[in-house]
Amino acid sequence: MPDLANQPLGVFDSGVGGLTVLSALQRALPNESLLYLGDTARVPYGSKPLDMVRGFARQIGRELLRRRVKGIVVACNTASAASLPELADELPVPVWGVVDPGVEAALAATRNGHVGVLGTVGTIDARVYQTRLEAAGMTTWGKACPLFVPIVEEGISDSSIATLVAQHYLADRPAVDTVILGCTHYPALRGTLQAVLGADVTLVDSAASTAAVVARDLRRTGLAAPAAAEGSVRHLVTGDVATYLHTARVLGGPLGPAEHVVLDALEPAPG
Image (tube, rainbow, N blue to C red; front, top):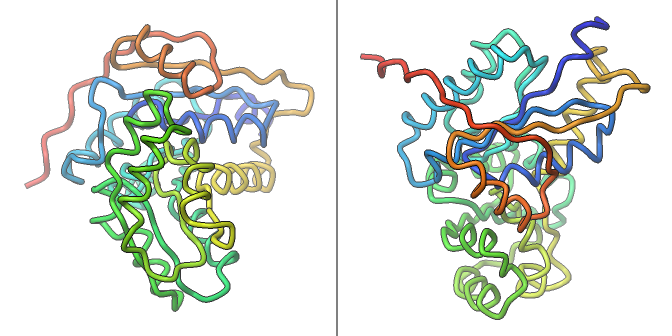
């Protein structure tokens, strides 16, 4: 499918957190054209009802399809929890989330079967990681860490403030030997979290795990861009573009041309 292989790969998130996934995809698939949509006009997703987030994901999926993407990566834990697998069933292109790759990596990493999950309120309350891990026989502990996102976006991930907040959130943890970073912002806090948790705890970065799965699947299905293709990154932003680019620079995300996009109205809720 040479024509399809040359089409861009769509990636979306509620804002800038998914840039960690975008960076991982760029490293794993340097020849791909990547089209990233940051829904900054409606950020954050983590505190919103999952039905609402499901509607956002469906709407963004339509927008990316209109721009002829060959597949879509839901680079947001809350949107993955809310919309998958239903979104994948509805769309005519492959769809990947960040949850299943993170679970697979944690199952491979754990030694004692006790796995922790750090995420937004929406992700933790939905129990998308915990349910999958427990079905595989694991014992789980989930912790919502809402202050981590503003810490990352303020560029203070390695500060004493970040350490104090991490110590607060992790104070009641059980004897987990593996912890999933269940929000795409959290890899920026890896150093701080590792210091608080200790060197014997394995941190699972769902961004890197997701990129590895997407790369594998594109190659298996013949959808990977040709080796001679020149990779690129473009950004679509539902909120203020200048603010988005400023935060993207703070996070060290892949930069590229950015434009404002207005999404179609949401479909009415069923029932």
